[in-house]
Length: 293
Length: 297
Image 1 (cartoon, each protein chain N blue to C red):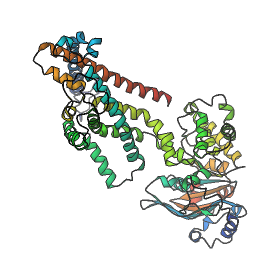
Image 2: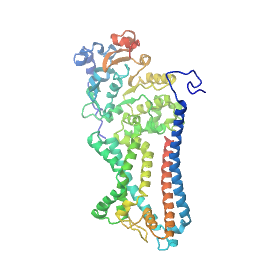
Image 3: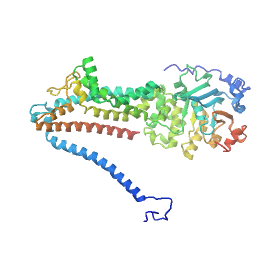
Image 4: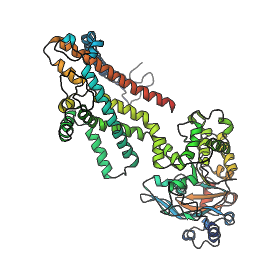
């Protein structure tokens, strides 16, 4: 395995964030969409992740169009928008999961610790360990509960105590008490909500800094959804979380910042409370009041 | 019940002919059923006939004796050992080649005209008559590579013959592994090889094994290509290495069945029974493996 290219660059995230906030003149995309200014909350905070004119097309069909925004550290940022608005595609750019789709073509930059994740010397395998992902449908491996969490540690050459790390991860995902007596049982025997928390534990095990969640509760019942939302809230202490959701109430409940995407464009990005109570853009208002989408 | 309105008030715009439509459906059902019966009955009669002719011959000495001019002393020892040697070698050769090719085509090959041409030709190769593979084996393995009329030459030929089927079966098994599993693996920083090795292959393995065993059971009954490669019809020693001369059960059966003496036909039936038992055992293994791994998932 190559030496981790991302580690050394502690870089100038501290510089870039204020610059972005101070008028955003450096970023070409913001001129076109006034609502996409870096929101006040993000201004004072260190950016965990920043995109610059990030665009994606699938064989020429634009899915995401020149999105520039900054995701502050230890915050929960929600992406909302109607089906097909590009929010999942955008999310998948943030840890280079789109590399796996041959037709997807990404342009622009994603800055993580001051380094563009799409630079040629960046290894996507390392990116995905540092920026973890939880998917829409719970997708545990058809192995034991223990192995589900340990797999990521093994493939990444974890040097510490495997068992201890598995326990810590399961505790962090609020699953330990339910599974501690049956770690060797198949993960497929768990309920949907438990499986999704196992997937979160699996992602946490490899010590990511950012967690991307693609509609993590959409396949779950209300009680399991509630537990996932509580968990997301708790995880904010240690992680930066980007969550894509269909469910506006969910976005309003859990997130600090909300971005509204429509037809691949960033329409509005701001404090969740403000965006839901006093949207600046007409399309945002129409969407959150249920008039389209 | 009146045919016009079916117990309800008749409507002028419709002439339902329900009775006729119903009869047509019933007729079709029985037609399909008779197709099933035809196949099953033909198979049962065939098997029963072979069994009645042959079962008296099958005993320990039949399995352990070499062929003979006298039907009472004739046995299938050489052919049975030849078949076991052959199947062992074919499995060793075709499994890694087939699985390797399937992994490449499913996981690594770019989607372009070359891959598509390759894929199409593999499907076509699966339909090539086995005698053609025999001629190829004779030219390439027996003559060009100078392996002679050996078990190895025969095994290589049969491996080529079943390779397309093995590849396609393995490809289907690999393709059936859900994409969400691959994504999960990549999502925590596994490399492509780690994903294939630890997630894709374990899930695909039962399907791959089933496909391989079923194509092996096709190879075990092949006569034409083995005949061309030079399996000998009379042999009175055990093959002891891959370069020895050999014969296999289908050839032994063919040889006995072609004899004028009635009794040798019964001996042939006995050998067919042994071949069938081996075949059934292989297929049972395939089913067992499939069920066992499916339960674990």
